[in-house]
Length: 247
Image 1 (cartoon, rainbow, N blue to C red):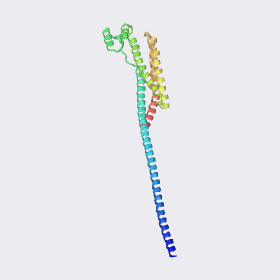
Image 2 (cartoon, rainbow, N blue to C red; image 1 turned 135 degrees about the vertical axis):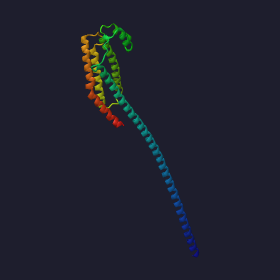
Image 3 (tube, rainbow, N blue to C red; image 1 turned 120 degrees about the vertical axis):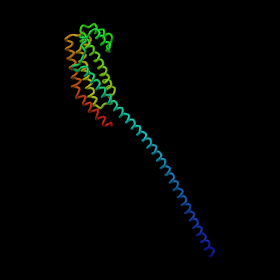
Image 4 (cartoon, rainbow, N blue to C red; image 1 turned 90 degrees about the vertical axis):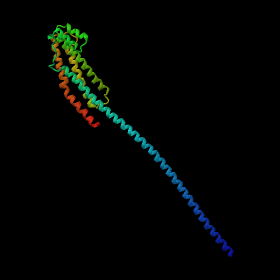
């Protein structure tokens, strides 16, 4: 009986030891598993963080590029608007200069032959035109129309430069500004056409031609000076509004 009690006690002791070992083993397993899960979770978090960092850096890079492009576009737009204004005013100024009334033109009819030669030598006229003045009976009218022809050609070059610049940069201008630029461009072209048609360029001087010339110059002056004024003021207002926003 005593041996049986000792055996039961020994078995109970072993059960306690086994239970303790199992508890330790299970605890160790759970700890290892928890640590493994934690490590995997940490690795995943680090991977996601790394990926997000790369995406953020790429977005920053793209944003910087976009800002640089926008800054360049803004600067380019400002440059184009300023150049447009300069070319428009230059074209207008040339038309007004050649068509304004009361211009002082030397009366070559009152010059001596030596004075005419001195005048022609200091002029920018082509040799063939200098010869025409020498041979003309009315040197004053001949020179007057010739001078106007030279000025008209120069004004057309300046006007064409403005016209072509507007066409080249059409996509840059706001709609209202483009409409005003086209309107003033047509007005300048019309003024130059009046000068060219009224002067009968290439024909000999006559009283009728002189009258037509002054009529044409007067119309051209009014178009470039008076009719263009409100359009030019509107263009200035629109350009200033764009420059203010861009700035």
